Length: 226
Image (cartoon, rainbow, N blue to C red):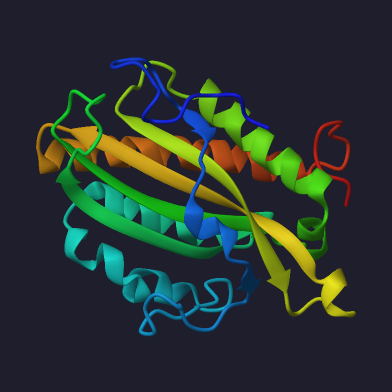
């Protein structure tokens, strides 16, 4: 797995692109597709592949941040990720707006954070540990290669257990995993935080497009086996 620092352990000012992120919330197995959220019953699953128009209207966390370019960049990322050109899809996302920085390691005053769950569109691939490991490490490598001088945004990778309820067979054959990409951005004020978030989303978009292209290339020696 990824041998890279966490936000708390990274020295101030050091470039930190992607790392293995430990989140207690990932210990609870999830399902795909899911229905409602245990933490908030008002949140529900939307299939953005069949209803892409809901991307811009159903993500409650982003509504109040719509004036910033980062929000539009994220919407476009979701539209591509769930569109016909992508070999992946999303399962969930969340966003926390600009708040005071908690870590003393950071020199910037504010931070924002959130998450994006991704998985193979070919659901059977998500039941293979080897394929999920490839997706995780390939994403990490792609992100690290993009915009190496950028220090005010970061991405964390977490593998989560999932039951793919639409796959045929008994429950044990439906067990698999998905990749949670957590993201952060920092700044001295809200516009700066959101500008750095926009840059983070743009970098992540480029990385995920590269991963999707590798998945779709049958001749790729490193891509998953279809």
